[in-house]
Image 1: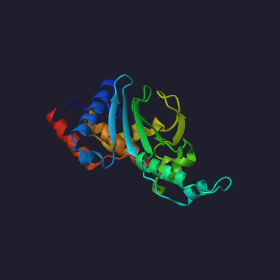
Image 2: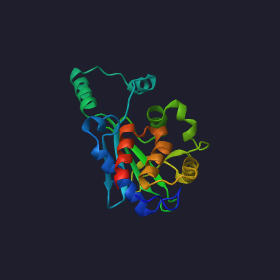
Image 3: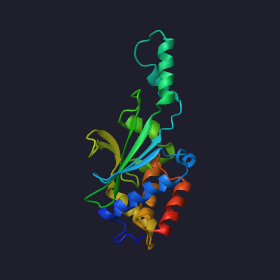
Image 4: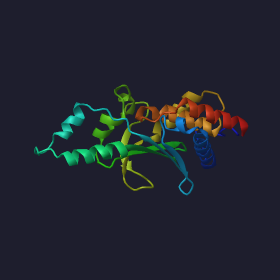
Length: 219
């Protein structure tokens, strides 16, 4: 696989090549490994959009209890409790990470949101900092952080409010990570996920990284 021509920037064909390679690498993993962190990886060829899905790790805390006790008290209904428990068990909240290439910055841009049948995680900053960003990463995701800020915007394809990481500093971060090294498009994409996605719960399992490296060597 040819190296990226003008790092830290990507061309549209290079982005498409990287996304295709990531999908192929994920599909080549054994089922047991697929479910360790990511549920699915797909590429929408029409929009040239990479889509990654994973379960939202939810830990009960005082913040959730606060929401649970809002409003007037009502008598508990065992049937309602059973239905809610069934929904949570069989339909866990899923985080969708959509990756598109910015036409102006020429770097990948991450849009993400939560799908939840119980509608517990609306696209608000409260949801972002309570459930999706670990405390140690909070400063990195603010306007003064190295990522350039995580905010809310309309999804360019879905036309609905979602979270996104502004790409104004992405090239700077990738350039610092690359140094003088040449990388293939898939290596660039994996590096980008590691640099920009980890703070919002998107990281690459080692098995996927190794599989991508293996397939790249054969290409």
